[in-house]
Image (cartoon, rainbow, N blue to C red; front, side, top):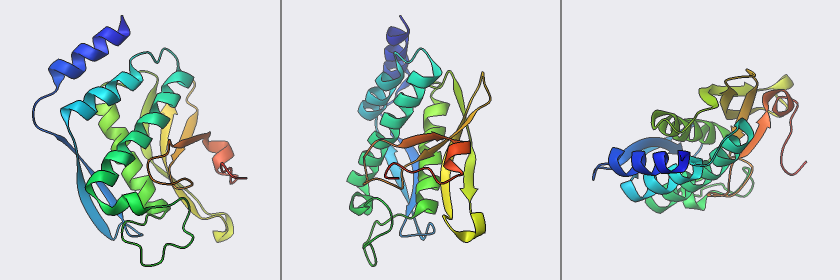
Length: 180
């Protein structure tokens, strides 16, 4: 039933006009761009959340949706060139550091939240870790409504369009990363 409600909301809540999300790239948000999310993509994104009946399922939907939105951005901007991490990117148009990723992902999360697709989480401001300037890093952040547990939603580690990584903030602050 929830899936049908999401489908109807997406179909009838959409207009021909595209929704806009501001992203940034080329390190330190040097370049900002508007990414348009059209009605078809809005429908596809809504379907990712249609059957999420728990906080863990919703986090999985968030992971997939953020990756999908990064692929949309890669069709409209040079961020398709972005590779995981910051290695070998000097001079690459569309490269993204963690500041760019945290800003852009937070924008995607606000888009998702504004559509009413989040039932178990809310979007918070980005989070920063910098223990003695080693492992200095930024990430988007969400909070589970029932438990109050916060999660880092991080897209910096992987190539553009891959699903986001999501870690409890207490683990992320210790330097947790998908590749060790």
